[in-house]
Length: 432
Ligand code: KIV
Image (cartoon, rainbow, N blue to C red; front, side, top):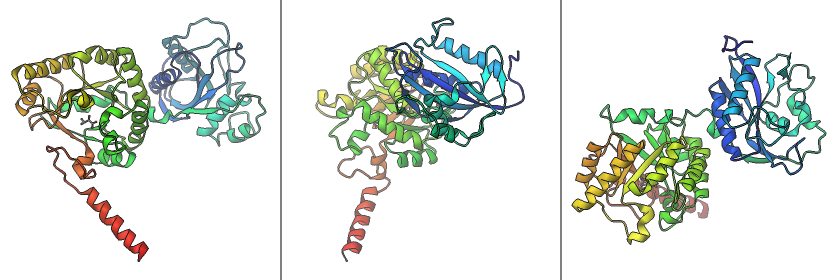
């Protein structure tokens, strides 16, 4: 058997299925592992499907199909798929069709027709299964498999099956083709030792995100300030995880290059378990890491998220999610004790392994001292010029939110003015 990748590249159709535990995470983890074996050329959405040929009461599946271009031979790839399944907790021996965290099948292997004890390609039951044909038709409708007279689209149209309709459950495209989560932060980590400042701006929509990414910012933050500048809330406390997921998805579509930082909204990281679940939701929406507010008090949450393999950025100083408790936006680090507290927070986050720390509304000298002290970059906002980088809410930078702008944010544009003028001119044209 061939047990190392060779020279020839083959396009494999791989069916993925999961009906136990965090099914979407299992599919995403399996896709990540597949990406190590070649290039994922296409991936369907994840569809929720009724179990087929399973015991009564079996939980529903999430199914998807990916096409992998790989140098592994078919049988060796089959072995690798078994390893991925085992890595995701699928026991070696189990009753046939028992619930499983992950099921990976080779549907086709380029133009090969193959029959061995372990593997038959094309998969012998492929054309009778809606949960395979529908996702496959979504990515390769024109594919005519070896031994078949018609393309996949036609196989699906001609399928006679009593399977209920598939429910489109989640987009998997955002997770594929992205660099590994840790890898996407490598360029950020290199800035501070090289003495270069980090530039971060916020985005809550596709167009802004794309403009920032194309403009060369180092980090795009899908920050919960979008609750104020895009959704019209009075503060960030009202923002929900569902809203952050939706906006993070939109931002992901626009960001191809910089790491995309998702912001955990208020109330979604009260415990380490909740923090991990919320962070996963943002990663599934496309974030390359998450930011959360708080220092030493948040260490259990920070450690739990990091242990789940998700990069974290800290946020200390003036914490917008605590504005109601604190009765307003107040500068931090004014007394010696407060400055020492901030330094302890920053040190603890740095030692835990965060990618960076946002210092918001911190006395400039204190922010400078923290920046000297910690190894990770600090990103200042209203914290003086001596942080390792700066972040602004993009609406403040471009003058898109004229009703309030913090004093430290210098507007370099007048988007609100441009819109007002264009509206007036258009109205005049229309009304005559
Ligand atoms: O949500 C946001 O925009 C932020 C920045 C102010 C850092 O957290």
